[in-house]
Length: 545
Ligand SMILES: [Ca+2]
Image (cartoon, rainbow, N blue to C red; front, side, top):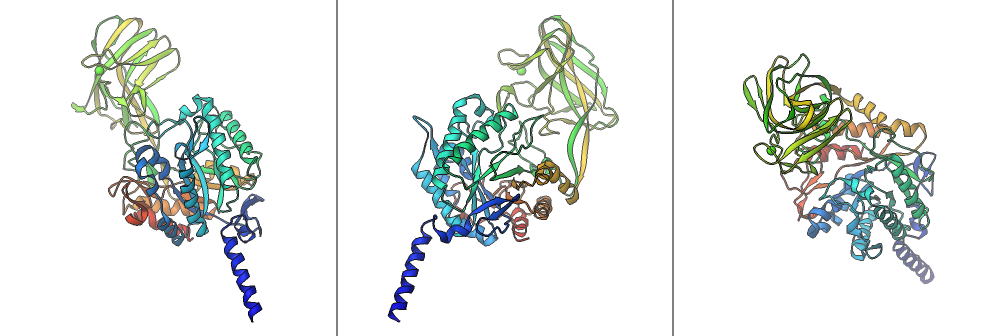
């Protein structure tokens, strides 16, 4: 008896020791890898599908609430996620939370320990973690426009160096699924992204050969989309938010004004606008002049038109300033956004709010700040070509801040223009747009998911992870509930891995947002414990589907 007891005690001690060390054989069964296009347990080859949520506020708080950053997540939250059935968390961070780059690239010990603690809470509940570089070096969420990342080669070097240090820290942790190298990269050209990715993967592989690389496609026109990378442990990630007018209803950070809140699901959703026709100006300027009124009178909205924008135009050799637009519809004044060109875009210091320029070629455009008609701030068109315009259609927002019209409406536009020596003409008039709707239901959502890159990847036997999807909602929002139910149902039917955007809001109880939970910035999840049913309920159901 005595001998048997000692043996049992010894085993007990070994098990205790082993559970403290992630290198040990007891945890080997937790390691995941990729085999034959699927995420599988390395030990058994059994395929697993991982589902969960983005725990994302760490990147956001670094910019906006640095004093509260570690309130974003706690052990209670890890337990809650496990109880809800989560098996995957995409953990976002801001580069500067974790790292310094001067005088040399190094990880900050306190933040690293915090992240290790979070990974430990999740690992204890058998939840896997994707580390997500959400805000890359040289960029910050208080100054949107991640394009600046690509302007300085040092940022690229820092990104690669930070990932190598992180991989070295986490290389033995089986509950790290992998590394999401750069959230939604928007490089000048697709090759810039694929080259940086290859370099970063190569650097990671010098210290860590076991974890997956989460591969996102570049956000560029033309040759955008996925490429297959040479590393065999790649998990290909898509962020799916179609139809945008539904998933981002009310979002006020996408463009200069907010996205309308009238997108419904299932139902007809505005997905595009098609240019229908322009109108003739009544008076124009040419030569050299001071500020003079130009106008377009008795313009009738054509058949099919649903939206109009006032436009300032230049034809031929032009050097003109424009200011103080005003519009009437059926005799009543229309409220325009920034008609006196005084307000700056919240996203671009070089552009006035809600004005955008286009040309067939040959023109330069400028926001003039030291001249104007009734107030400083005017728009300039200078050059020589067929046509150039400033107008108020922002494609990402579609209908804001356009003028809603019906066929047969009578419109007039007035503005002031100043010519600086030109032989062409300049003036003010309208462009009309026809809306394109798509009737969304689950079948259409599935087609959109497949064509977003999923079919391309599955045909090549590559594993697919929907890293983000979600819907802005208030508590009992029928559109959000049905959209999330159908979309997560589609993802499950295709056996895709997924993480919902997002775990929590920081804007307090009234925020119209994406979060499963909505808490004030200073609240920890355990002190908040407030869920948004329209997101929480369909998400929870999909986790268990
Ligand atoms: Ca002005």
